[in-house]
Image (cartoon, rainbow, N blue to C red; front, top):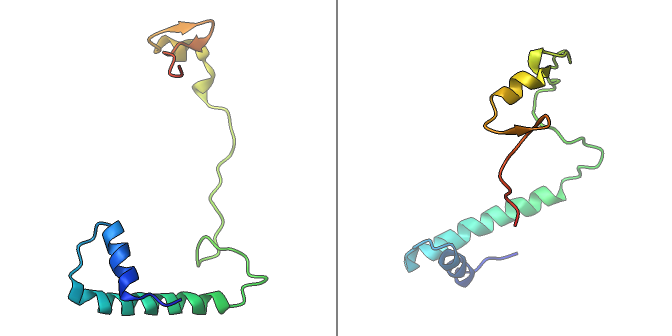
Length: 95
């Protein structure tokens, strides 16, 4: 896919980027280089390669799933501005 000067000017205008007309040919050349590199990446065979979240194989640190002192509803609702039947009362936000 080739990007010409007119396309670069249109994208610059839509992006509200002020580029002088003299700079557009060089910018088009740079964008064409980027597009060629992307096309090269598309040619790479990635079948059988698992997606990675990091270049270092490392598991996530896990903690024990234990109950803490957060289970006292009366203490929690005591901080609420308004409560009813064991629930927080909040203003209606959907009309």
